[in-house]
View 1 (tube, rainbow, N blue to C red):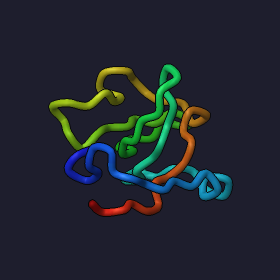
View 2: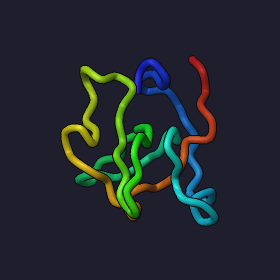
View 3: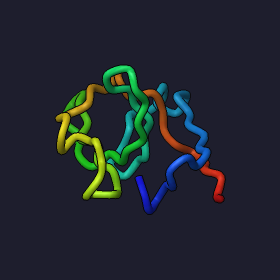
View 4: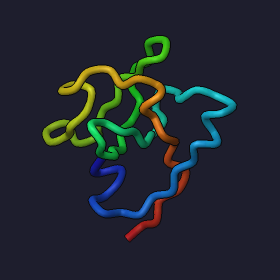
Length: 84
């Protein structure tokens, strides 16, 4: 997610926000894919599937490579990051 988030930067994410609303375009979300956790930005929404992209277009494992992410795989929204 560089340059928005730096490698190994500490972030806080909330799953509570998505109890009351769905992820929106532009939200930075945490999700699971093949038992790993990733942070990406929601860029497209199609019912219960999300197209998530990293800000680093050249080096990002995101929906451009793995396809749409199901809503159930989204854990939460990044709400705070600690600057280094």
